[in-house]
Length: 509
Image (cartoon, rainbow, N blue to C red; front, side, top):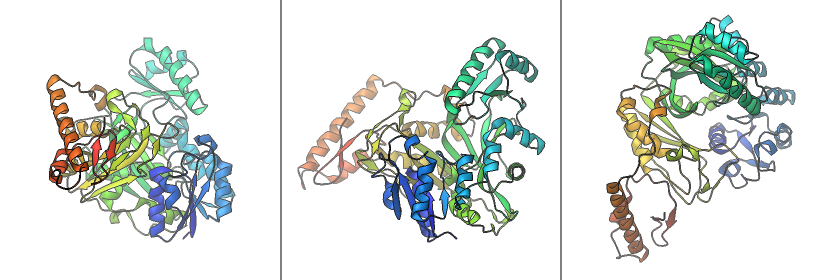
């Protein structure tokens, strides 16, 4: 096993890797930009190396700087987390050329699965079901129109080198195809430097279901079941759960075997996720993420397996040491991504200083976070601040626990998506499992405030202000239990000023 590794990332995923490594007796090196000089991942590591700069291109995406940090600190391996260089085949190759272990899949697998056209060809050859469509890019809008006539409308134009929902357009009738082609190709060129697009049939009312796999270098491989990731906006996931309400044991076994077949088709090793679209009882290969997924904690909660530990073991050359029959599934888990954004304003980014922080707790509640009071939230990096994860013996209890945990949460200084998540979790359609990837499209997250709501809000604000003043005057000025009662379940997202006596917060709009 390694003595020291470098974590080439930041935020909550860097802390996630550090925590498991510490438990295994492995020292951790982290890197940080000027913006992250006081970040938690720089303080929790054994060694933190400054990269300089404030933009990703000047720091976390600079391969030379990251490799130099590993060399200068004596790291034996690099864990890329997710995002940044995690799915960069060139970086994976350079890490191994430098004599370091890459805690991820081979560069060749990253290349094959990173190009959607290549991956479709490989999967088709391996007998993995793919969404009906092309295996070659289209050169023009005219070619796209001819292909769409054969595939059948609606169709989806997709960037060949895409990801993160960029370079995707849905076309329902021929007249809209030319404009959609230009837009998708231009967006793909701007985002990935590759304007190639291809077509596939667009599935109405699909569900996004993915399978977590882990393979070693000795021929061993298992899957850890499915995750339901259909609650998303603009192809960005907001709520994930494990398992899925539409997957029974037989389908889980079938999809798991298909996912492992897909991974072995590219000689895969380490952790990976095979994503499928499920529609009407059928499932089709979408893509493979050649890294650890953001939503991996829900799988850990249900299986009891530390996936980062398994990543480190496999990268160090150890065999898995267990088979599929040893993987057990218990209960239900949910994850809510807490992004710095305002869902009531169309999920626009929210920036500011974290002035107050109240984290949820209690049985079977986990929060993966790098938040701290005084932290500056800007636009330099991804807006995800934290992930809230809960487990319950069944889906109903897991939902109730997540709602309770979200109501306890208070991130003061920036807006988050917590209120939107509560709205979804309390929706009867969601509770019945009746949703697909378009669920949020017709979901009103603005909820206009009526006259009665304004009166109630004003009364609550006045009571909170009076209670805060009484507490600030010291003992005997008010009953502390009144203060707790007034704030229980508030789930606010606005700044809070600290009372000098009690340490409790007095909300200041």
